[in-house]
Image (cartoon, rainbow, N blue to C red; front, side):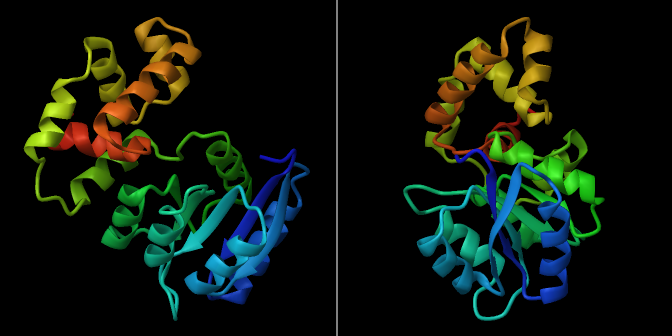
Length: 216
């Protein structure tokens, strides 16, 4: 990632994009490097410009944000994606997060929190509170765990399971370190093992696996 966090704005409403550009443009460590009015245009922007964080609307013409999120996250080198939504238990948002998006923002989020959220996901952490994590998990369209997924959860060591359960509760790395009396660096090592064993790429997916296994 460059010294400044490069942001792509994706929304079919130009007024929303203008407002977001003004909010983010006032932060010295953030730079809006592109804007797109739909998912297909966002993909073209990513082909042309390096991006660290994408703010992605869901309901758009031509290509919606869910499809765009899935296609972006299938690429070998991907930016972090924050879903923009009104969040009225929209299962599209849940599916986007389950597919690998780093979190979500309500469109009426106060400007300072939007800036902080971009910084947070750029640093590799999600923007999900414990209450929101629980709400998302309850709305995930899941067919239950497969035998392989259950075996993967059972293969976690005791410490890895403790870390995974803390993640499922929405705890940050700092919170987990304090709770389990370890360093943040050690938490990250355990979390890396959890990701690998469960075959997931983000904390939301960890929470979903632990929930589906009946452990959270």
